[in-house]
Image 1: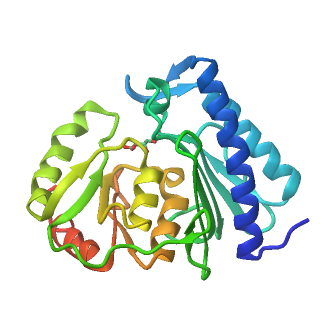
Image 2: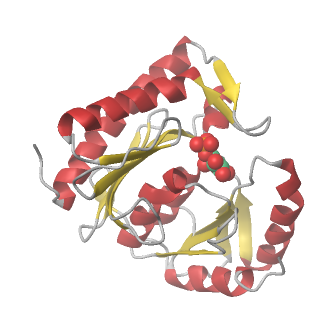
Image 3: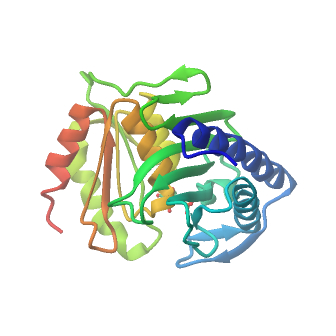
Length: 267
Ligand code: IPD
């Protein structure tokens, strides 16, 4: 059995994310079957989401039987080791179902209770199989895209290239659009890629200067938030007692500007 060393945890996360991502990609090639809508019309789950999560869960259980599990598609399990794996088998499911390559497998190992407010993220892997990119981070060891060490942007002289996302519940769209309107004055442009873990990975890689979104679930951001922090950036969450907490990520100055605009917005 492996230990709780960050590098061992990230090695396992990366290995399983690759295998799971290849399975997702294979199922995509075979044709995607929409299994159900979860909460609203846009909140879909495919058979592949469930199959990929089952694969990840069984690989983790084999390698680390004492750890807990928190995943998007199956029941949570409290472990005995103090480590919990936080898993989104296919982040960007709508893209996946539509044949858009911006989807990924996101796997993080956290220490502490299964609460993002208090846990310590030790390791994370975000693998985008259709794009062939593996992002990894281990606490204290930096963030990486394959063999290249990542660094968030520091200067944004032409304005910030930002990304965001919208909740699946149509009743939240007006509020999210009002938030976008508040942010646009500091933006060079805005992306809505459709996969939160990739948005965060791209902030870590310096492709995006910042990212903000309301209503993410822990598995959407656990690995990506570690990537941003390990690449020298900052991540904040607020309104955590509400159903739709806001997450903000970026290089230090863009993060501070987003925080100033959004933490004071009228809600
Ligand atoms: C979703 C994606 C999307 C974000 C949603 C998430 P899922 O994750 O990350 O970009 O806007 O909030 O729920 O449902 O595809 O795993």
